[in-house]
Length: 510
Image (cartoon, rainbow, N blue to C red; front, side, top):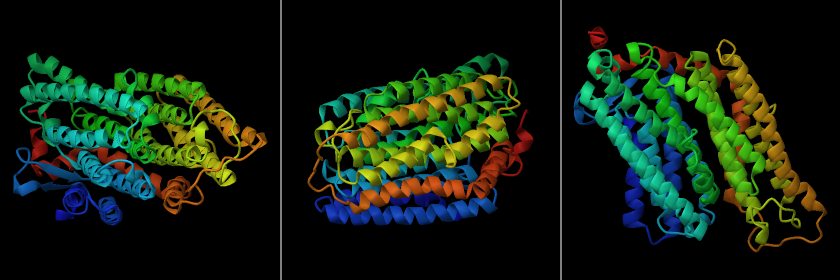
């Protein structure tokens, strides 16, 4: 694909600068530029996905500096899938925000484009230092988006979010420094070779650096015990921003998968599968905690935020098994959970904006505009998040349960996933009952000016729900593609050859 690999990073970067410099005073032009760029991004990333499905990993060296010394981007099945998922999510978010949300603060579209740039860069980069750089880009943009529209609760949650991520960034640099000090490289393909050559006296330093990185990635993925920032942040973020943040936790899960299958995978000697003993137990606890929060939540947005924590627990259970079958199942669930979380946040905003003074509190209130239509959307999103048939959540959980049959922790995995699924059903059932069924018996009707049929938010919400339906209908071919992703992750030779050349593998273990 040559130069096209850089487009998912360069296009939003150029568009963000253009919006700030040329059209920042005209909201209509900002919307046109931002939506057009995101549509183009969907087209480009779809092309990358089609190319990656039929070819091996491909490396792009910026300014032709060779790896491991230069900056490289790597396109393979996993990175292509993640940038395509990001662009689809981004299109739904920008359509939803262009109805009203983008006017509640300054520079929404520029920050949104920078956010896409950072996320896409994190998925495409081939070395850990540039992973840190793209982390900072996406985090700085997310700080601005989180505080978009102001408000005391949002400011309080935003400050906590900033402090947690600044701490994470500091730990990231410490971990990177420790790894570089003993291996002399941060290129992930080169690191996969160098970890086998580390002297025994430096092994403890390398292990400590790798575990610090794991902690940072777990912060991004909201894994226990570093999950506490997520409920307040997501529940208080503007709706389109919370929907966009559905991909942020996936960046953490992606990094765990990429780094600890490539550099600390099967060929890493004493460091092989370094993350496995920590990820699986933490993921099980995360799932329990998330779904307990769903049961206890008193606000709709908090309920959805806790369900995101639970879904990350389910996803990381699959990743923590570190088998091809479990990774394939986990990636399918990752696609599903991204669409279901985004859909629920957007639908919740449509509900909340029509309930007037009752907001997102889970108390009965008089009927509001489009109650029946929104009840249907909420019902679809809820059964998707709970993992009930026939939607993709059920297929994803079924795949994960099947992949865990040979695990020593099978009893724990099956028990916790099944019990927490029931907890999720009860939690969302209670919320739906209060919002739509019990409220139907309350006298009167809430009338909110301008809340008739907002076209773009409804298109965006239906689009996210449509993603769940498409994942269900095309589960077969999607699973086949994901099996290929897992195969590439466990056969790292093609990735290493694409980055370092055909002779690089001969250096392993020397």
